[in-house]
Amino acid sequence: MQPFRISDIDDSQAPLLDHLIELRARLVRAFLAFAVAFGICFYFSGDIFAFLVRPLTEAFPPGQGKLIYTKLYEAFFVEVKIALFAAFFVSFPVIANQIWAFVAPGLYAKEKKAFLPFLVATPVLFTMGAALAYYVVMPTAFHFFLGFEGQKGGLKLEALPGTGDYLALVMQFILAFGISFLLPVLLMLLNRAGIITRAQCVAARRYAIVGIFIIAAVATPPDVISQLLLAVPLLALYEGTLLFMWFTEKRDARDKAVEETQAAVESGTPTA
Image (cartoon, rainbow, N blue to C red; front, side, top):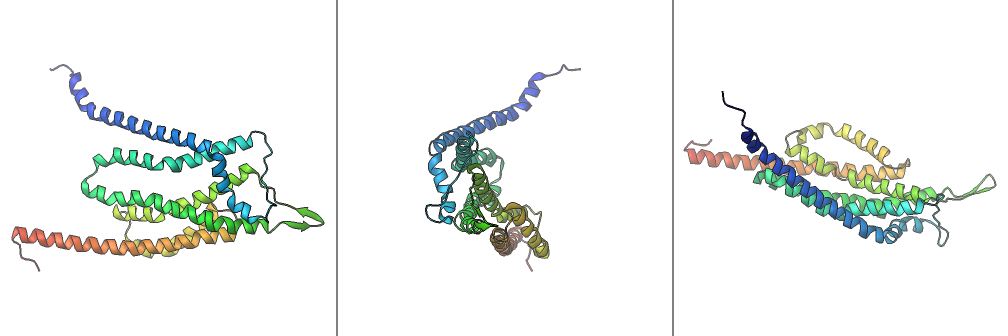
């Protein structure tokens, strides 16, 4: 009976320890990138908030809009939240690069080639959704909300939005539209993984339409305009994804036929 060999266990665990050490290094770099971005964004938090508040400023009549805060510390914490919010977007390329650098060595070349476009498409689609929210949806919604100002029962009804409430609303708009615009990435990843097919997505179109309107109702403020401005682009993205699936599945079938033909020629087997 041989004694228990500690060295064998150490050898078998060495690769795992190497991966954990590398993971720690990647996380530290990502955190440092976020911390540096937070410091910079906090310094410019006033300018960032001025940019975020512009749709509300333009919705008010000239010189009549105002933001208030009812707690002494509210304005400070609003700037902290703005810095955190902006720092994530500024540092996202570094964070994504660290994630990719950690995952990529474990992927085959074909898997890297298939996954890389989705990594590039994610920030592009998110930015498109956020831009739609900022330049189209928010001005439209704010004009709608401010339309309720006026005289009600002999009293003046005036909108006095708080800084914290306004920032929460802006973040809700940007995140809702940005994340929702990642629908094509999710569908294409599921399709490339073989979990769903284009035929299944086409068959489930009516359920997808209902689901999109439910998501739009939950993710946006409770007004029909914002819900439609989110639901309609999502429907267009869904149909566009189906079209892209058709092209990719057709290309994959053609490539598979070419590979089978080449394999048959190399083996000397006659093809039909």
